[in-house]
Length: 547
Image (cartoon, rainbow, N blue to C red; front, side, top):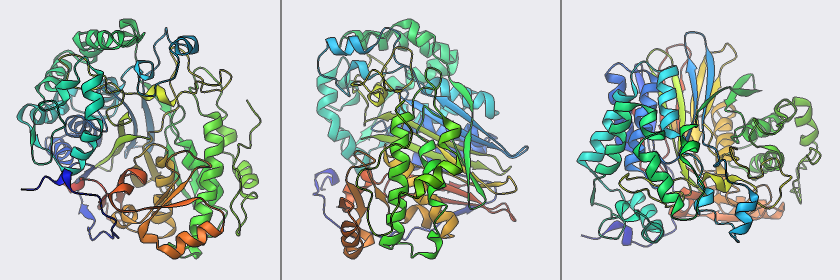
């Protein structure tokens, strides 16, 4: 039998034939079927959307460690049907207190996947706080499906095997326990069974002792040991002092709907700024795949990114002018910079000076609640530093800091949270009812994918599955002025016209584009019947499953 990971990548044109999933009682949509089923199990056992989301996130930490894990971070938006409120949880970690730019300079060249890029893992505390604040089950309950998958094992898929193989060498070389995430020194191959009793052991410790078992117990000691071995400066006190924060969700209106994001240090505000600019154009009158429509989307995103990258930082340490960034008047000024027949040569911030892997999932229950949840290591296995006898890698979220400009709001500093790419999202109706819980993964791609999904849902009237299937564009590498990847299903004529307008377009063809344009999930709620419509990106292994 041929191993699918050995097959060459071939260009191909792709249009999904997947149907939306419908239910009255609940839906869980994730990037891996076993995780969707884990969340569904919790709904069946009486949990709500928040409980199901955390169960799915924990399962993804087991089955998709190439993107996420308990060594990473999480963010959450929760829609409570009783009072139509949207609440935000920031489960991102902070840089070690002893880390500063001087430490980095003494090490020489900055290593994006090195020990100084490791911030305190926020996932475990974020999971605990999500179910405690928004759910109705215990953390022990919602961790059980993930523990069982880790102990019993699961069959590796070709997509995850490819991602694993891409970092197998770094895992093996980094230590101290990279071999714990390999099979006989190599990445597990498609069709092989992967068992991870070590991560199951950590999850059992957390199930029995709560977050303290992780942040003050054996895992914390092993994390510090692993980082010290690479010259890192994280201390036990950094882990013991970690906490999530509950923030006021930020939002803007778009065509009378309200789009919600977590506030900075996350980059969700980028989507809101782009939508504010885009709202001034009658994009619904333009053909969905036309270069004219794409040009307006690209330019709106470029202007939003120019401000976001200049201003987003940890608001507990610097002033982030959120109200000004979300001002409709400011968006109108930015909109004036867009020409219909020529790309902006260099998008820059309108304010005066002052690559990646993630899992997104959505869960909704029959009572009308919804949880938009995202969890990430950042770049694949993150730092590829694996603490002994723990079965997970440590994230490299510190790569989001600016290290070459000490005056930048997002400059690296001890105890500070970095610019974060992961961003769950929600949309509510003019009357406050839930419209959709959705998200799109993929580093810089996330605001871009989200913006295009909003246009698909609201301007185009697409159903949940069609909206996530539709081809996308992405400034994947270095927004706002980097190359723009355009999926092949737009057609050669569209790429040619965008190039004529001055956009540095690159075709994103075949399996390559799954990383470039991201992967996403959507759950839409019908306001009259309460029926949920689920969509899951065919660019990944996942699916939406109904209760």
